[in-house]
Length: 286
Ligand SMILES: C[S@@+](CC[C@H](N)C(=O)[O-])C[C@H]1O[C@@H](n2cnc3c(N)ncnc32)[C@H](O)[C@@H]1O
Image 1 (tube, rainbow, N blue to C red):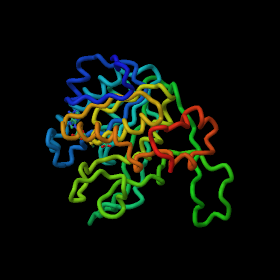
Image 2: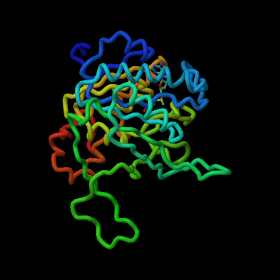
Image 3: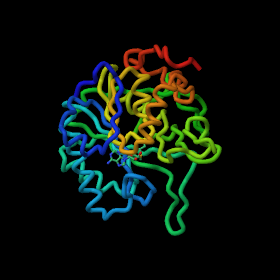
């Protein structure tokens, strides 16, 4: 697919139709954050389907992404923890190789349950086309001192498969400036992913210049982060209002979207300057 000089592109259409055209190729990383089939109110998606129908549809999407992916390319597939069985099955059946089941522990909220433990995490499966990823950057973070530890590690710690240092964008005062809001202060898209999440994923699995794909772009978080990290990116979103929002957000360059504020946190990563070009001319320095 030609990017006609633009390094970040967004298409307003059904991602399955987009993928069926088979015009996309050499994708290095896909972030897959589809509607979870949990009865949410999407304008262009029935989020309450029979599981066989929903997973049959997603399997076709995931199979076509596999075809469009370069050897060793990665997919990060986010879903609810109760769907892990389906996720594994569909990824395996479409050819992907499992690498990690990442637990994204939400530190600001939990969903209470009456007869089982409250839910405090979301799952993300990292899988690759082929046995080994073409790129895997071992990130080191300046993780805060844990309560019973006397000293902080002087060179930080490696990121593991439990991510408990990334705040989700909830309603209420935890949401901060990053959540996109309308004039009344309500969040425009309740599933907006945090930039810190995409920063970690894109930094781990790509190099500058690589191609990042997001078939369910929503508010465009993946594109906003890819642009800052000098990756090429293609997003597809079915709702025209969200597409307008993505275009606005890509141009607005809001301080709340600026990933530079996290650079110090990753400073112990050995090849950081190579994977995170340190020139964000279009974003103000924090
Ligand atoms: C869970 S949200 C993604 C949120 C996104 N990660 C963000 O940071 O904003 C899923 C998105 O997929 C869109 N969508 C639903 N069906 C679609 C389809 N068939 N093709 C493309 N987009 C679709 C929805 O409108 C919604 O914005």
